Amino acid sequence: MRIVEAHLHLDGRGVLAMDEATFERRSPLTGDVVTVAAAAKAADVDRAVQSAHAAFAAWADTGPGEKRRILNACADALEARTEEFVGIGIGETGSTPFWYRNNVKVAAGFLREAASMTTQIKGEIIPANKAGTLSMAYRQPLGVLVGMAPWNAPVILGVRAFAMPLACGNTMVMKASEKCPGLHDLIARCMTEGGLPPGVLNTVHHSTDDAAEVVNALIDHPLTRRINFTGSTRVGQIIAERAAKHLKPCLLELGGKNPLLVLEDADGDAAARAAVFGAYMNQGQICMSTEKVIVVETVADAFETALRARVEALTLGDPSHQRDLASVVDRDTIDHVADLVRDADAKGARIFGGPVPVEGTMMPATLIAGVTPEMDLYAAETFAPVTALVRAKDEEDAVAIANDTEYGLTCAIFTRDVRRGFAVARRLSTGIVHINGPTVGDEAQMPFGGTKASGYGRFGGTAAIDEFTELRWITVEDPDQHYPI
Image (cartoon, rainbow, N blue to C red):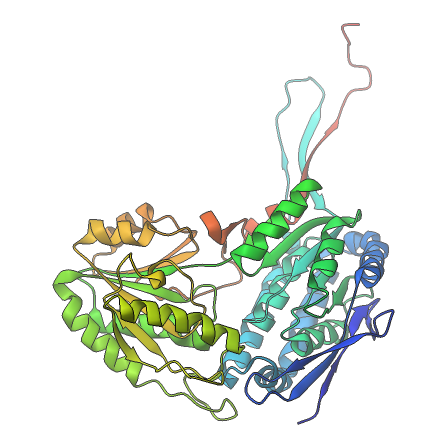
């Protein structure tokens, strides 16, 4: 396999780090080097920010029609490289071809939705008490923004970090993930091919050892105005604390312990299919993954049997051939869930699927039934192909179990009574609720985001305009107005 070279992208071209430092990304499957990437440090961050700052005025003044044309062309360029994304993705993070193709499809949709929003950045005229005054709420771009993208949905979340900010007239520095520098480098190249002007989007890669230096330099830089970050709650807290020292707002999309509730009147087969998709797509490495299936006791035996059969039918194998599951991103993931599985087993849970591999990164789909609050798995996010099955006495108990978590990203409810489903949805403390659908789902026009330890702020659609613009009060007044002194 050809080794991919990933560069920093500054002023619309690929460049080396100032000290010419590089780092390697190795395949989680083979351990072979798949990407050699430029390793940025604080000085490179300054170069990226200065480039974005220099491009800001012209991009902010670019008309919405031209922005729309460019962003649509960028979507076309992204889709034209779909199979290249698949090849690099399998090498860097080890998931299935379907996952990367879907990533490109959804990411292109994000760009096209952002393109359509360039004419939707609106203010309003507000009646003024002062005679002869025209009073306006006016939205305008902020300047240089920072987007920090993760590895797990590398194309979707890489593009989401900058699509709406650019549509709103800002310029961007994207911090790529050290686990998929080749994929994030390819995104930057596609944007250049699509006609994005130099400096409008700059991308920096960094080694694991240099992560703190690069992140701190991005947050601390006097020219960066806001930060969006998708990743773990632990890192999101660090970013928010540092940004708060500079009074810089953040949009944070963080972890989740996402529940799927199966009420006694649910379509059990539909719920089982949704649970399997939600729990095991991309090996459970999605912020929206179904981490906890909560089933009402009266239907629990039948549902457990149906769910177990579907889980045990899932295929696992080399991602160069289509399988349901392939590799997780690293061995640390396996070691983390191995501890959770051992703890649950010791405390009386029933374990189906698996076993947890002693070595390597290929883990079968695992269902752990009979999970109780005493088990670590009850509360801990796995981010792996493992889900917990919890029994509830009734609807009230199911809601209490679903809310018994520090997280609040997404959840699902299965019931044949839609009015009942909506009533339950209103009682669940998550940013997203799906009635008779899986916990995993994203559309570019939707207000995507969580509550509690899952973060704050919203990506997507008109809600994102609030995140990536400044709302100002501007008046035009009578110069001959009367003053009391």
